[in-house]
Length: 320
Image (cartoon, rainbow, N blue to C red):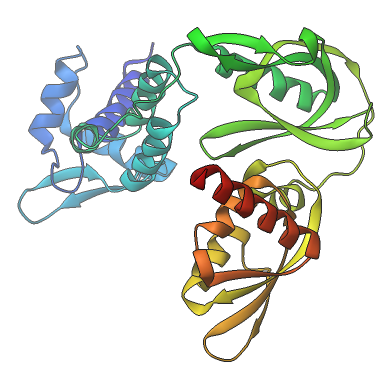
């Protein structure tokens, strides 16, 4: 290979991996680095190489204050951007420790050695990480099916004692047209359309097994954002319009849980009436009950009845 072209590649690697604002390199250090890789050149040629990298778009500056030298100002990813991605990967349960370490190392390679050292000190892995990588490959299969407009069949299971799989529907296959993969509550969900029931539903990817693509199909229109907003914590149930009286101290919590599109009306004495659309499910009822008397369901009556019945059952359970 042409010596000057190879020299450019080594200089690019040098600036990306071994410099930042606090660790610039002087020309003698740059020359020593190149010579350690059997690349020899005069200062004039190296200056020309640096200018070529700058013209190509690399943000290289020369510090005129101590410490003196050349350094790369910015790279494709800022340090904080890489940290955010690493934290997300490290906290994800579905990724094994092996896969997490592999992904983190690839992300760290985007940083210089000094920033790598600092980020490594702050990596904390989720202790609940999965032990096998099957979920990772299941996601890959599902994503390919979504891209290629293919329907799938699969078995769905629950974990029982001794961590054994107990398949639902007598281990019969489910059929689904997958539309999207959604990450929520430390889990991936496959959202799809059931031709048997003519409706959309979702399944936890880590509970899907024996997935097979069974053919192409024409898809109908689907809104992922609408589906997510009306399925509280990815629970399954009837979507209803729900009106709540909410204490003003919980307004921020409501926005966090349902977004900024809720209908809100101010009442007297620090209370607000809020209207949302979501599933009337046990997870939603549990969410309501954690706030005790600071939230009250105004409608629908069916939800009020369900909560009342649940509370009576619990009272009987704990008092008998």
